[in-house]
Length: 340
Image (cartoon, rainbow, N blue to C red; front, side):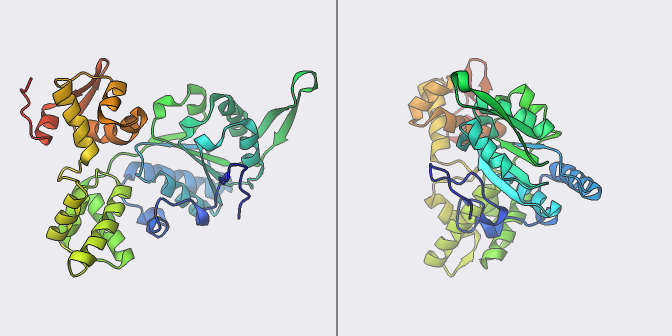
């Protein structure tokens, strides 16, 4: 077990003890590149890097994975650890509050280990500067004491690989971003790949699902494997309580309607956002902070959770003046595009 911090939060966890979002998530993670579905360009790039580094007997170069949450950034880092036969240490940006936190993590690494920092854009800028020398020169200089007694101590650290994950790559500073050898983005999944993920999840969980039932879950999963797996878990429960345990199309439709997830994958908050723009602000533009107040949600949640899917689906547009609903977005909530 890793020693906890004073705040009761592990600095990092090994691949076997990585924090899970649900009790089944660990067994659902693909163990290798061959079993990882989708993201073909990113997977190919990582295969090349890990294969070449393995042949040279060197640690991987630093990698930045960006994209919306739930698309497989953590899974890919664990696969890299398995491919390189190295331990993966997992932490998140908000946990690293001061230079001492970072130094504690780095000095506990072994040669070739992978340090995975989720939401790396949330690392304080004062701490981020210490990462520069760690990533390039594998050393870190920290200040001890203050005033006349202040002195700098240089800590040598093993050669390691930093895998950073971010949902908002635009918030990363240019100096940090430039230190990653590979910068690659994960995109939303298509219905075919999601259907493969749903089918695989059902097989692992021992759930019977027919093709139509699996397709119904896949097309409402917002292009996100994590959401697809969560839906499978709920639909499985529904099938066991209301049916014979088999996920059919009618069972999947009834279960997802109970969750208020429509055929486009929109949940109640998505629809509330669209209605607010259309009805309260006459289609927009409206600023994100004003919109957040109108729907009773944090602006960060709107920008990181709801907006990416709504924008990529063509339901809203982000303009310099604010958010604007599209004709497709109006239709999604049953309104005419020409409504004032």
